Every structure is written in C-alpha cells, then in structure tokens.
Image (cartoon, rainbow, N blue to C red):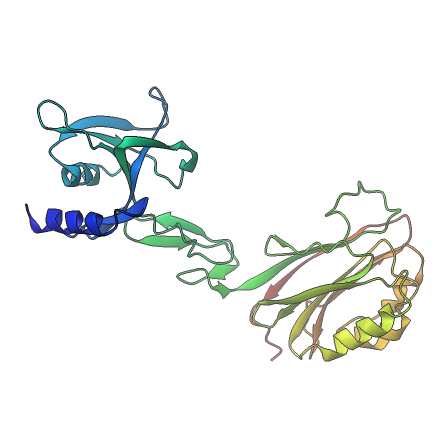
Length: 311
C-alpha cells in the first residue's frame, strides 16, 4: 500500500465514530469530505448532471479517477466488493453543497465530496465565490462597489432611499414604507415617523433606529439626543414613514447639523421627507427631498465615494 493509501486508511480508522470524515490525496493536496453509510441519489436520465460509473480496486483509486475529470465534484463508492474483487465507483458532476437534499442513507456506500472552498462564504459584501480549476482555491467576483481579495473594500455606497406617507398613491407592503437601501442591502425599518440608518465614513454599517414622531411626545427629544451623540464623520440616512409631523420639533437643530436645510417641511400631516446627510462637514452629495400630502412618495438615489473625503 502506498503512502497516500496508508494515510487515508489510518485517518478513517481514527474517525470511524463520526458520520463525516476528511480524506486527502497528499499528491494533489485535495481534501474530500467522506460520508460513511451515505450516497448521492440522483435521477439516472438527468441531462444537466454528468454521471459515470466505473470499477476500481479501492476507495483511493475512486478518488483519483474523479480527479481526472474537471467536471467531477464527488463520488459514490460502493464498499461491497464485486465477484472480481473490484468496487463500484460512481462519478458525479454535483456535490453535497449543490444537492444536499439528495444525500441519502445507504449502508453499503461512502459518499465523498471534494471540499468546497466556497462553503464558508469567504466573499464579503455580497461577492460571489468562484471555485478555481485546481478545486483548492477560489476567487471572489465582487460587486462594482467593492474590491479586494474578499470584496472587503467598499469603493462607494449606492443609496436608494424613499419616504412614503400612508395616503400616497403607492401599494403599501412591508418594504414600500421607508426604504433605505445601501448597496442592495435593505434597511427597511417600517417604523412610523423618522427612520434613521447610520454608516461611518468608510462605508461600514453602524446602527439603525426609528422615532415615532407622529404619536410619541418624547420622540423629538430622543431623536435630538441620538443625533447629537453620533460621532463625527457619520453618514446619516433618514426617511419618514406615514407621518412625522407632530413631535419632531425638538430635533430641528440636530437635523440641520447633519445637512438638513428645511426639516420643518415635514410639519404638514402625512407629507413625506428624506435626507442623505453627514455629520462633521458638508459634502456635495447631501440630498434632501419632500413631497406634500397625497403627492408622494419622494425618492433619491445617491452615490457616495468611500472613504468620505472633504478635502
């Protein structure tokens, strides 16, 4: 028995108490997850799944046979020898990640799937993980607003924001109230009154909250305190849902400090109002919009370069 086969055999013996173990071809550096007593059960005549059956001398040969085909991602190894002493080896173009529901109990089989480096979702900010041809490595395909090996760098914030009053001419669902969407991530709070989302200058989400400035007498003071306590260099996104006209007055100066020029515009019952603001300066992208009762909603799409630079 060669060194690779010896390694695999010892490894399996040490971990027989577990339903899934890891086996490795040391020559290729590729790891396999082994599911003892299980097999991948797939339709025989499927046109979109490549399947091939061959006979091998042992499990390691089954693994190496799979490695000989770029399309092969997993194998079903029949642990019961045939009359000629060989074992059945089924090569499959799918694995337990793409067809987890097809992994069934079958005592006479061991299913082995090539370890998927994308299984732990290493790509950040909505990036797509793409397995490379050697099947050990991956690359992250980033969205346009991100860069870096793992899409960790934010190049800009693409903001879509909407303020909706209850009597606006728009079908109301859970996320057609106050939409505050950043790089395709929905921060829909659905709180009546002023909804607020905060990012730092590097494009990292910090917090979100809402203040019922329609019905809660303390909401204006609470919003004032919240805005005043935000650190400088904060991107502040605000959208009113339903109505925020009753108790916002205590926060007017705090709203002006983040770029609002007419926060009193929301004083009309069920008018809509939004703000893309900034605490600690006056960048050119600050945006404020409103619509009177029955004439909303109001929308804004704003692209903010990251990090925010006021120079």
